[in-house]
Image 1: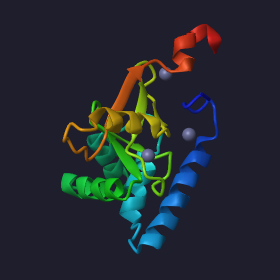
Image 2: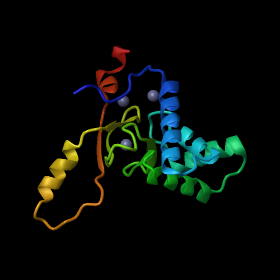
Image 3: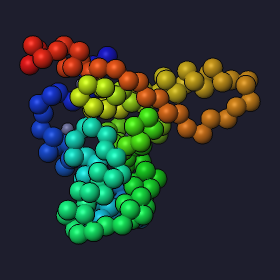
Image 4: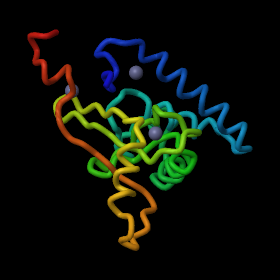
Length: 163
Ligand SMILES: [Zn+2]
Ligand SMILES: [Zn+2]
Ligand SMILES: [Zn+2]
């Protein structure tokens, strides 16, 4: 399996540009508006590959455009979540941009590095398929899967001498 975390040094501006471009296309296709506020929040979530909390987004947003009320941020995050543009990392109560693509049906499986704080999304339906197989005949109907694996990314596991 190829490394799922972005290289430590990479052109992150390109990640952000890709994400915003895809969001633009998706919203157009779905007939919903990527308002300047929604775009700004999405950009803040994509600020890095580290999941970011709603209050950090609120702080940053308030710096950009003056005081913003918390419900505004939550509503905006709900919109981004509903459209699959971001995921919520339950264990961190934080948000991260979707790197698989909202048009690919998936439910968000993440590797979370406890050293550098980055999260990497797994694009592999075998996990969900295995869970569904396990549940066969149980009568339980899963609505969503939340798979979050904590550990250390290859960079952090290699230690500082690898830098
Ligand atoms: Zn990046
Ligand atoms: Zn995703
Ligand atoms: Zn790491």
